[in-house]
Length: 506
Picture: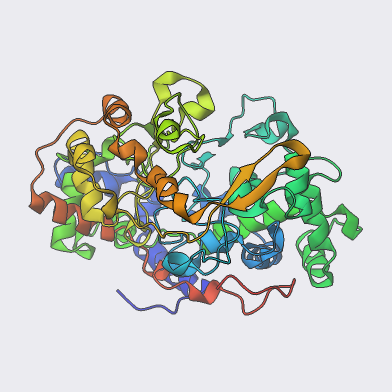
């Protein structure tokens, strides 16, 4: 395949070449059906190749909105303490993730595996779930975001924009897409971007339940942005209808960030896409062809990883091990009794959204586009290699029982803050170094508890399949054929500076 300069222009030339090669495929899904018939057992292949029509705004948001969104995506001005940006956890140099199992939010420094919290940089613990990739999230079919789908577009719901979110009926009007709705929430997460009350005015507003409305957290962030003259000019270019800077809201911010993400992180020019557009299976290596047959055949992967983006967009319990601090679910207090730290450590997944116990331990089926680039994998980043993930999916309960937390990538904070007191006397003090060992036990507590691990195993939906090591290697080869070559190097997306003048998340 030709080497194309890694840029938006390069991507356009690459996609144009694919379109020319696949004219007949775009006109009809027949070539895909013919390929499926040729490769027996592969009848779950996507019905048609991906096209511009699969994306919001036909994959072409305005250049001015994308430029604004790019600046905001990398600017730490959106965070309470001005020390973390969207890009910190979704960096182009780490394939729109952070390259670790569970990241460190506000208070830490650095990027990716090098991000740390030293003795003079206390944090409030780990982000409890793995940072999801952003590839193709500008496509219409991604109607629910986050691992538990807590931000979702639902035309039947009578809330602003038809979005079901943690803000419920308090979500502002005017959001362009579910991707924009998603962008509203990391900035108000205390552990991710907002910080704690007493640290900044954003966190103070959140602590008093003032998120939306005048002088709420979102309004205070927007106020910061509109106080920067360069941003005002960018907003006016992106939103010509704005008369005064005072009209700039966080909805404008979220829409611009979503436009940038949708444009910059589109990834549908992989070898597999070329096969779908042309029907020429020779564009896939031989081991990838075998892996494709397994994926859509005996390995059963396409039972959940179906459709053009290899996801059914549904939620499943697959006995994925749980590491990290969890989400405070359940009634188990064994960690509290053993250490004195008054927290619960389970993560019930989709049940947190639906309140239905049948959804316990279910998480959204991830898209597999560019999957080889986006590890560690699992809703909490339990596995560092694709081979390990595939072995788990072929025999989930056995792999759950055999799992070692050493398979994860967890940096160890040197200093962690804990809360004490309440109300106006709330304090944040570093945990006594002598208690850090007990604190760190939370990272493995659920996995090492027979009863808690047993609950995860009992909810598993997947059958055990007798896959060989040859299966594993061929499936890995196919997953690599889902990588868009223009996604391998995305450093050109990182701006040299941002309008606030704060250090760029690079």
